[in-house]
Length: 312
Image (cartoon, rainbow, N blue to C red; front, side, top):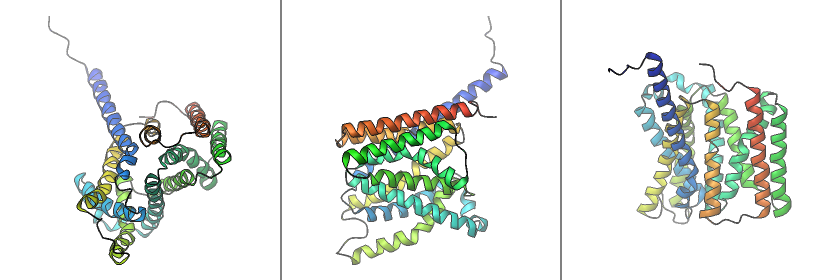
């Protein structure tokens, strides 16, 4: 007996399933790379953080430009409207925010503070919510306020028990949240945006790199061929996950993307505790528990306040 041929609905559902699987795979690839960043930047931990930051900014521009060409967006690079004054002002501010975030992260990895880095990226979504209230006049549901309060309690536990403010965590959370706030108003996408940000950072980065040989005999491209390759590689690892993530955001719902993004601080947390053997005290456990609970409360409240299924 001849087998029935698939109908149009079955074909469409199959295509949607394949597209969803592709989107999840792309997002997992991007978040896994970001989560492994501490391993990457440990390889250049012996190089001063400002030098690594300058090279990361400069080499990111090289690889992002190549990606722009590869995905067929070369026309934007040569378009006058792409460099409108308002756009450049916005991207200069976001570039400053992302450079600050990169710099703090690079310094944290070099100084064995990956656990604080993880904490900062867990806090970032709640910090973004708070900035939305202050600068955009957004109104929050009660669960969001409870989540922010729980995060504050978590950070306070560390301050009280360890006797020091987790500046790395706060700096990463604030800089990344400001970056997100600025990019929310920017009239460009993620890949073109990073191109403009690194383009605007380039004069400062190149000036610092050129100044290095004049200071204490430092070299321009690292102390060895291996160091030079590693410094160039920081640009590649910055650009590659962005390409995967940009594609994933075109396929998946933002709620799915938001959930998958927690892979990044979770991977950093696991690396800090089980690979880098950073101290994880009872105070850390309590603090992280409060923040994880806050994120769970926020996620629960958000799911109840908006439709689960996005409009087609």
